[in-house]
Length: 94
Image (cartoon, helix red, strand yellow):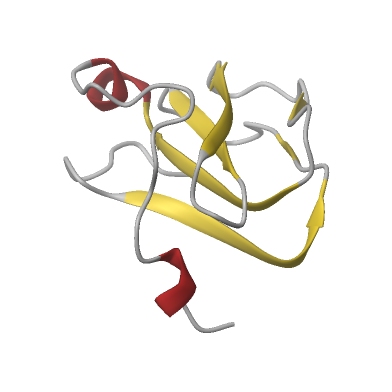
């Protein structure tokens, strides 16, 4: 919250020990973000673009172990899509 910019490769990773439906929102966030919902094997199971400074919930449709928020503009410049795989998530400590 309260961020006005992110570095090119920066984001925020939310880690959940148990799979669950995850919801995110943008209250007091001033830059467009996209949340990637990621399963325990690292596959992106959902993506939701979020509008700055709103309280609309953006929820996964599947139970996931991770949610990764990245800048929407950066994500659009990549080839990251649904079912792309994020590697080395298992090395993250809780």
